[in-house]
Length: 166
Image (cartoon, rainbow, N blue to C red; front, top):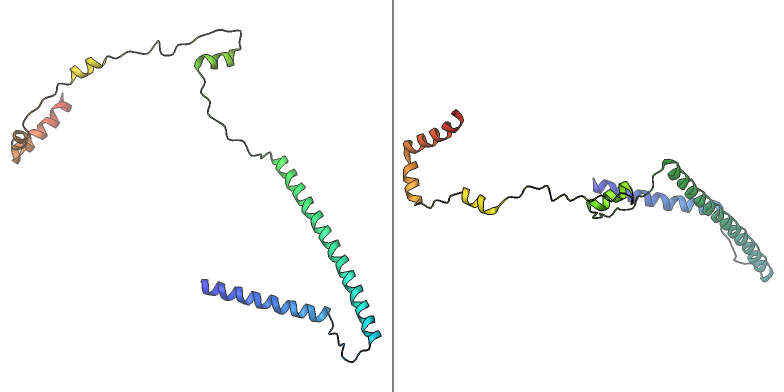
């Protein structure tokens, strides 16, 4: 696929060169200066100078039109954006506001309400949670021996069945 694209690209370049040559051959005549005298060469140079001047004027006019069209396109794009209402919004920054400041902003500065959100929180003692979980240290080999074989699997099945059956 890349080879096809490369061939198409090369062919397009060749076609452009041929088109350019055809255009130049049509527009510019071959100048034969062989055997011309001094006055005839001067006259020929004056004609070329006049042609260059007219071509420069045309080029300047075309450039001015192009610049004008570019400005007009930009203005129209801006009008379209204005009509759509699509503006780039600035990135908002996260602001830390306390509850008191939030209430003051919502209710106004006349209301002096203080709100302590931490006052109603339930306190938990860490010592109580540690006492609830007794830590048993036993020999792991005894546990493996007890659970090995079919008897161990039956114990595991019964243990899993008993809490849900109650």
